[in-house]
Image (tube, rainbow, N blue to C red; front, side):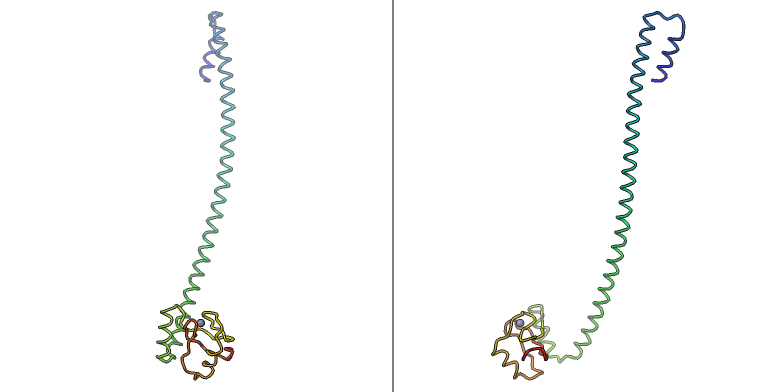
Length: 171
Ligand SMILES: [Zn+2]
């Protein structure tokens, strides 16, 4: 477009062109000038859009960076928690093995059988209430428990788990 304008200007400046041709050239120059104005406006608009997009992109990158940092921190906390859980579980397994080694075979068999059946093998009897099913034992069951030998295996009459008697059992 600029080349066209220069050519037209050269034509106008040169000698020997007719009045009609001069009018046409002047008209074209006018049209080109208007078109150039429109294109410059569009260029400006595109530059503004580009600046806005750049700012938006910078913001998005910063958000992404922050999210990635947060993800890394959360992942590290999760891994640490998993390690804690693993070592805690290993410790409980060791403690359980130690307890199991001290139990009479008959009691252990009864416990494992009950646990396989309903998920819970034994529960504390606290204040006359079975801590597995949360039900309070009736008078008859309680009096039977009172006369049972300390090493006798006793069960909850409601849910069947082995009841562990302590001074807090309310017997
Ligand atoms: Zn029960």
